[in-house]
Amino acid sequence: DAGITQSPRHKVTETGTPVTLRCHQTENHRYMYWYRQDPGHGLRLIHYSYGVKDTDKGEVSDGYSVSRSKTEDFLLTLESATSSQTSVYFCAISRVRNEQFFGPGTRLTVL
Amino acid sequence: GIQVEQSPPDLILQEGANSTLRCNFSDSVNNLQWFHQNPWGQLINLFYIPSGTKQNGRLSATTVATERYSLLYISSSQTTDSGVYFCAVERDAGNMLTFGGGTRLMVKP
Image 1: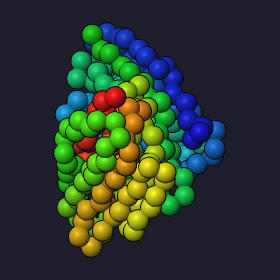
Image 2 (image 1 turned 180 degrees about the vertical axis):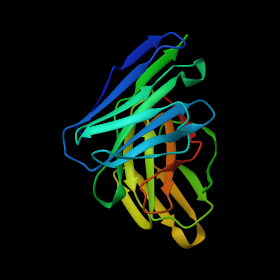
Image 3 (image 1 turned 90 degrees about the vertical axis):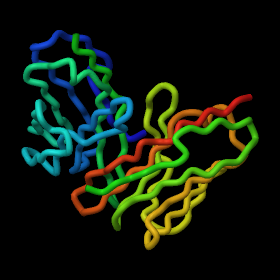
Image 4 (image 1 turned 135 degrees about the vertical axis):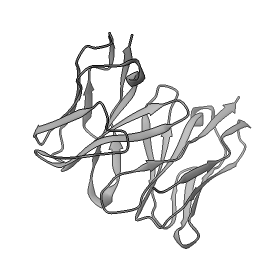
């Protein structure tokens, strides 16, 4: 498949706690993305990366930060989780011709 | 930003029927993809089709970029085709996809 894994796959946490989600790819692609999926909103881009230490904001970046210290890993951090960040989070990578492939998703619940 | 609208929002079919899903977008694009999200939540790439026509088995897609729409055809539908179909477009070269709201398909045996 696309060689993308996400961890954890499920997480329940409490409001105010920090949370880090990890996306790992095995195929050395330059571009990586974080999306969230919510009912009624489809998928929306949070942040993306176009290389090691090169990141930029997407449509819904408030409350999130990212880091990419290695080509294969892209981390999404919620510094202080809120209930509005309960969602399903998808990581994606971009191969040639801008086509994106998605990981299996992480279901996050903030109580 | 670019607007992406999909129709119909919901579709129920009997197994074996054909269907057409539509995606309209508000600006010129250099990337258009169709995805299937299965009942387990996995997003599966169907087509990368910024223009022209492609076919893959029972599925085919056509994008008319000048008129800003794309169509996904499903023939001889099967219960495993159930799920949500998303169209997503990228306007600029920044590789950021904007998704439509999806078409939820249920195929009954």
